[in-house]
Length: 165
Image (cartoon, rainbow, N blue to C red; front, side, top):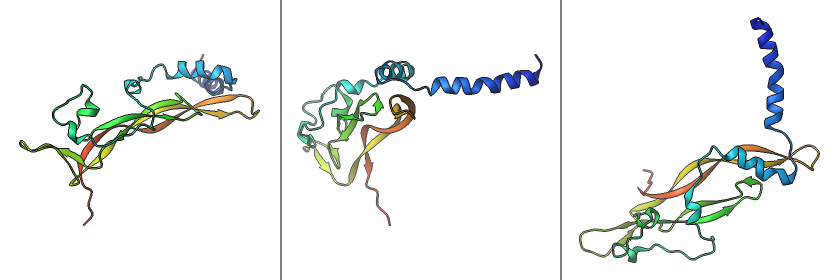
């Protein structure tokens, strides 16, 4: 085969590969297909720490420094908890996102009791994650899975107050 024939052959195969990647699936086939497509992306262990979003929360200033829990999210000077978020048309449909517990940051100075300082802000640390979005095909009975990036809050950090002069 010469180069021209290889190029033509390759151009004929592109629609076949594209069609296979974007093929339409029945509802019962979606979970298995999503698992296969997402298997090479890292899984996130914070899902195990997540609580239902209805649980109460507050800035745990009184815990410092007496009770230092094992997890970094509770030991941080900008502590956070994980809550579950659900998007029915995405795979995975449930994931954990961080929720800052303080609006300011916990300050520990000398031997004084810790305080939440409004001179600093607790802000989210964002990470882009790949999800598969379920989209209907033309017939309305089948669906295709399209990769989408979703920005997810994965933690909180302390920052100086953003002020404009």
